[in-house]
Length: 390
Image (cartoon, rainbow, N blue to C red; front, side):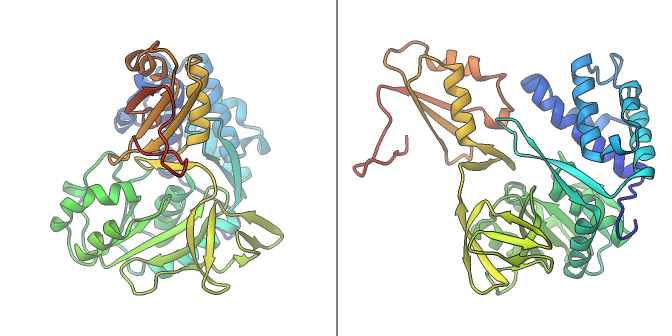
């Protein structure tokens, strides 16, 4: 890769294509599709009836997504995506397009319960961030990737970073990091808060000298402390979003609590940053220690994370009320099991909880489905008038 282009080899493109297929099929097929099926997909896997079995709408939707992601319309090869018979054919089309134009790549932001929007980043900006990341993770031998690489965090840490390090990227999605995926001395484990908590039980088997990264959601004190006490040498938490890429970092095994801005960013007010001519608004309220160090203080919107996936509770509420017109109101919250709970105000006990669950089943990805549905005549409120737990 040069300083201004993303010249991605076929193996990295296959990982990207596979995860984009999984993301789109999770949207279109909902509960009838299991993402773990993708572990058996190879370059020769057919995308037609004999393989993944895309129907005409899915084939066009995924081709459009790939066209947007890799900006293939600039090289004029996008129609060839619709002619591809296998995943390998699809990769070849993208590779041909990137050979002509590879200065920019796009990611889908949000959309777990609504319509995602496209966010583009230049190769120059992404590779600049990777150069800073190289300084945070010296002398790595492998990068073990537990997250999808079609999101910007997975792409930066699971594709660009190992490529710049010159080390292999080990795909460890759908894994508890055993066997060949067990972390060894010199490895970097790329994960998210939800998975770091689940991996703690197996860390006693890890070698010394393992580093880790975490992003996409706040990493709790309990989880971070447990990971560091388990022997992880360095646990870098990155704050950022699809719109910004990485904004700042902190070492949760170190002594400094604040995040440090990556060098390309400058503070622009209390909740905005500037890089070059571009200004972006951050999704969180920010407490600034100085112009280079900060702490996020909570979301400014209604987005929560469920199993590592962002869910917009406002969008989810609107969808539920649309699916259940008998409901006059709806409240949502995360339960102690980190799954969504719903309370619906229905004046008459029709429909019941089971019927509502059936109506919602295929409306959105499984992580966004309420695992508990309660019906009542009024929303539960505290003495101060705020929505109370249920």
